[in-house]
Amino acid sequence: MNSLSTTNATDIQADYIKLLIAQLQYQNPLEPMDNNEMASQLAQFSQLQNLESMNTNFAEVLNTTRRSYANSLLGKTVTFFVQDETTGALDKKVGIVDSVLNDPETGESLLGVTTGEGEEAQEYTLSLDSVILVEN
Figure 1 (cartoon, rainbow, N blue to C red):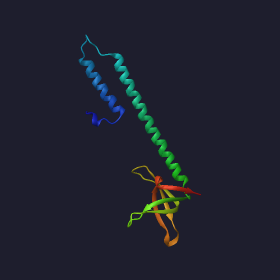
Figure 2 (cartoon, rainbow, N blue to C red):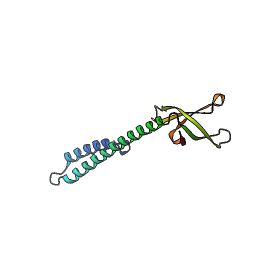
Figure 3 (cartoon, rainbow, N blue to C red):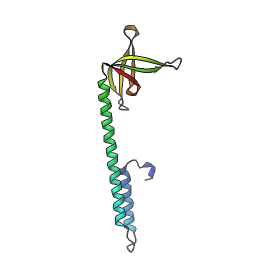
Figure 4 (cartoon, helix red, strand yellow):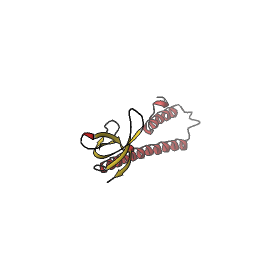
């Protein structure tokens, strides 16, 4: 397995264990490997696994927080910009958040926003990052 195909600490540690076993099988009995160095390397892999686990947990907390925030915007008035298709200029829009949806592919929370009323009403789907102002 080459280093480009290794994607996480568990894979790296498994490869290291295979290499370590091969080294132990073929080592010179008169010059054995340094046990302290092996223990240190295994400890580093354990720390790397813990960091990856923490990163995953933080990502889950952030995703949950973003969903909660998106849900808290229901019924609120938001301001955002959209790009005019003909001129390319940014147009400021103000609308009310009437739905929150989660993109199943990306997990991103999206806002359904309606601007205007009656025949003038327009529907927009926005990411949370698109909102520049929130009002009650």
